[in-house]
Amino acid sequence: MGKVAAVYNLMPQDTDVSMEDMAKRIPEVVPQGVRIVKVQAKPFAFGLKVLEVTFLMEDIAGITDNLEASLQTIEGVQTVEPVSVSLI
Image (cartoon, rainbow, N blue to C red):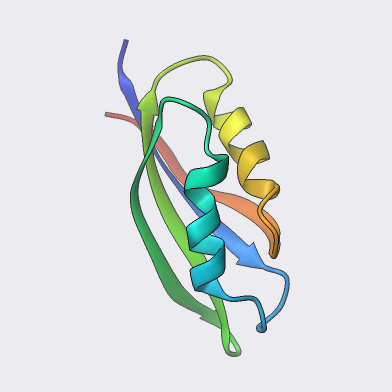
């Protein structure tokens, strides 16, 4: 069984949402077996930032769906958008 590297953008609800607070909540919600590799706030548009998060996990059926659903529960997150998902 291989490993999957996945990058997601977490879009905040508005410019007042703290990127640091969102980042602190990520480890609390990720499913077991998913490792956070990198978390980085990046400029998106018109003063809005996006939180780009890289994860590493085993290639198990449904794990990325579970991860996306878990990330969506973070307070202040409007949308979770996959940037890339690939086998490594």
